[in-house]
Image (tube, rainbow, N blue to C red; front, side):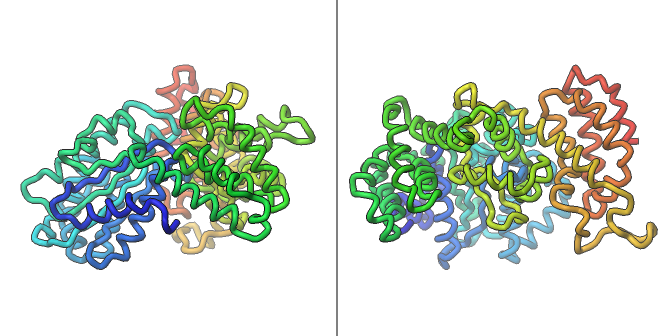
Length: 517
């Protein structure tokens, strides 16, 4: 929003244009303090600044449903590709490097940085025009092992290695004029790398920014939203604005969530919801910065689960729905999720409409994009929520594993690609209507959800009964989607993950192993 974060953005702009400044700018802040909004603004301004080259950006995210946005191994290849698209000079140097090292995309991030960024960027060593890259929310990235949302030492190690490799790259004797703007929470595995050392990086911790200025920015945001129309202006006072601004305690996501909740039910209910929210959070302000947000999440969930005065029967369904959205490996549409969970579209939309303050729901029910609005909501559900509300990490995988198998049982059939001859390729530019988004999701993702479920052995019989007889139909779908190589990898993944990682899974590796032969 214009008029907010003025000094922070000015400091970042000065860093970009100062050739003597460190080549890394680390913006640290706890969840919800506005790091991604700042990063987006930096990208927007950099792309419009003729004095620099905006190399590209990578926004890590646990809440989009895209596995690639959680895998740190995708960061460097993405940035290299984005710069290559706009710089013939870099593109040619990158192509030469790929010809010499074609396997680099599958190597560790340290090798990626050297061969996909450092060596090709030596083509700019005599240039004085800064090249700016933005990496947002790096704490939400990990390795492929972290796609379920859980943190582990391996994920932390990979992120740490990437940051250390970046610092090494920028300390080399021959340095191109490149700068990296990186945002993250101040997690230990990031703090303990050289990126937090002011010798190598410009460091700004958002909690050190003048609190009065932060509150003023949040107040401007709240007043603009609450007074956006004459009807709303007549319902909310200056005191209301000030109370919510103080409640936020410097956390922007509190203001955003509060206003989505209060204004989401329309003008007539806005004031009632607003005051209910303030009353529910007022007593918990002293316990910590996350408390106001947690109180709001609890209030939104309680209201969403309440049907005809009782929340008991509805809560498990709501938990299953949210767990499925949080565990999805691709962004789904309302139609696709309804098909996977065997719900009517109307019932699913009715449930989602009560979660509008925390879940993004595309207007078009066939459009992918269903996701939680902020990673802090998933963090709350998985760790900080009360025991009766808390969701176990495996719940979404349990639901989606079973959903994938049932959708394949329902939808896979002979000649699903509608090919006229088995002697011709069935790859086509336009996907047949019989391969819906839900079937695509089921065919591509089923093994991963089975592996991450609470008890993979319980799927043994279903895999044998449902999947095995339809194996060739599944291969046909994977062929139409140009995913045959992935199909082979999935079968090997199923053998390794399901059979070996789960000691109780005594399928004799038969169902999965026979499929791979």
